[in-house]
Amino acid sequence: MTRLERNERLIRLSLFMIALSAISVLVIITVFIFEQGTPIMFKYGLKSFLLGRDWYPSEKSFGLFPMIIGSLMVTFGALIIGVPLGLASAIFLAEFSHRRLTRILKPVIELLAGIPSVVYGFIGLMFLVPLIREKLGGPGLSVLAASIILGIMILPTVISIAIDSIRAVPDSFREGSLALGATRWQTVRMVVLPAARSGIIAGIILGMGRAVGETMAVIMIAGNAADIPGSILDPVRTLTANIALEMAYASGEHREALFATGVILFVIIMILNTIANVTAARQRKR
Image (cartoon, rainbow, N blue to C red; front, top):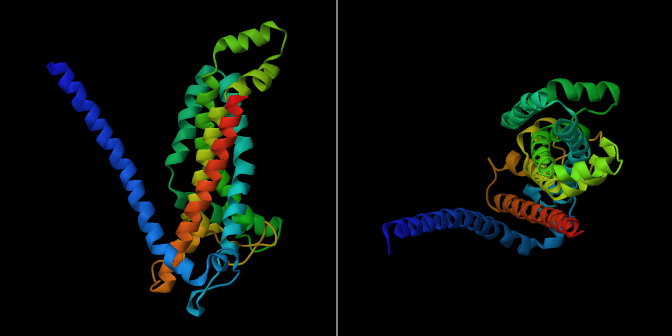
């Protein structure tokens, strides 16, 4: 075996160990969360956790249904706001804007991902919440406020990945469509976007993951009421906020119930990601 082959084998082994360590960390975290959270779920029953509507840890009542509904409402609200805006911005920057403008705006948009979530929450608390309270009614701290802020927070992810996916479509696709008499917008809508669909969906999945897992901004502007919201103007508490608000002083079964909250959140994220990945795979086959 030559020295070059030994070095190549060593590099390959090193990369394998690094990849294995990353997977091992994920496995350890998963095992720890399930080990801490599942015993109390079996003790009081999975149904009481998933469908119970009362969260009173001091009275041994651990109903997470309001928080589950709250998390889903805020997440889908963020997607409804962020995905169309992000996709429209990506289409404009990738297909219609001047190259120089795109080179300036794309890094600026990506910088938004580096802004701490507490800054987004503070801006929402100072400007968005009073605006909703004055114009639409309610306390202002609401599903709508959280959805808008999260919709803005996922924009950098959706836009950046969508731009890269659209640019990855070969120019021959565009040229062939234009040669057949299609307009530029028809080419984008009927040729480019279907070809870039898998990458765009991947960006949406990543954005959804951030929306589901966001904590600080949601705590600041969602209201944190452990009740099922009757409208988008009502306050809401998400699963992540529930853990962050109470873990500092929780003990005993209360602490175990918060770990159970983490288990349910983990399962919900896995289900949403699986649905999105299956949808993306079906679209690629088409």
